Amino acid sequence: MSKTLSTKELAKKIINDEQTLILDVRNTDEFDDWKIEGGNVEVINEPYFNLLDSVDPVSGKLQKDQEVIVVCAKGGSSEMIADMLEEDGFTDVYNLEGGMKAWSEHLEPVKIGDLSDGGSIYQFIRLGKGCLSYFIESNGEAAVVDANRMTDVYEKFAEEKGVQIKYAIDTHLHADHISGGRELAERTGGVYYLPEKDAAEVTFEYAALQEGSDIHVGNTSINVQPLYSPGHTLGSTSLIVDNQYLLTGDILFVKSIGRPDLAGKAEDWVGDLRDTLYSRYKELSDDLIVLPAHYSFAEELGKGGSVSARLGDLYQRNAGLKVEDENEFRKMVTENLPPQPNAYEDIRKTNMGKITPETEEQKEMEIGPNRCAVEG
Image (tube, rainbow, N blue to C red; front, side):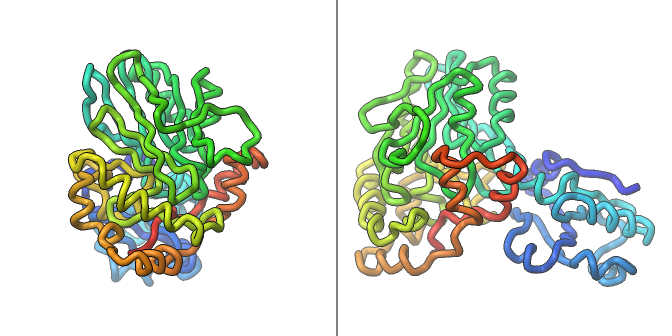
């Protein structure tokens, strides 16, 4: 029997920038749509059915003594291929437990930094999906921003830190993944915040996330200041945390900018997007550290696996912030768009409370990469 590797162990390898060789045995179309990525990750794709008789199609591409991690959709086919590789004389083969389905759900916490008065901010990296969520804690209390649906991870983290989750905040109505914000608030007795302009069709109670109504974590000086920043959605609202960090939601990323079309409103919202990026954010301190809700490229992962950048630096190097001509900008964000996220309409309905899919269906809805960015 081949050895197994957990998603947590794989995440640590990628975050630590270790040399990682993956043999992905899914069909080529599935592989091309979505794969494991990282700065030092090499991936070879050879469909499972090509290896049923023999591992010869890949044996020439691999060294017998190098570490090989075999991956499939759910962990079954890859286990068989890993066993066959061992029988063929490969000495360091692992099967990724749960396959890409489990990889899609793994959340890895990384500390971003300390806050004034003893608090801390953490980024939860969903490496298999490119989603980023945040855990802000101070003086025994915590706020979770843009939570994924795997709420138990945040609850366990809060327990380890000895803090109570008081607030769950969504910067906007998500379209690429199912939000865990409302469920997290219900489970912890906290308050769920959502921008009012994104909540026109929601079927549940929420607290309005709005500029001018700051949120205080831990009854100390840790301040979470909402900043209305429409463009990805009509209600998109950024958060300035402790006057150090700018949580941009899906408005601004490290290497790209947010797309305005996931509610079918690209032409209507492109002006809002430009105003937010070229006016509202411009008025903020260049020294704010941008913490987005997603990343699209493996090279956006920085030291220790975090995804962040100084706002002033992004105005120098992010192509989406350097389009001076308004018509050219409009064309870029309405025509140069990747495919829309898988099942995004049903994901939006789920996040509105209009439908409540079973857990397995929710997992299937989220399979695949995030596609919230304009491709520059």
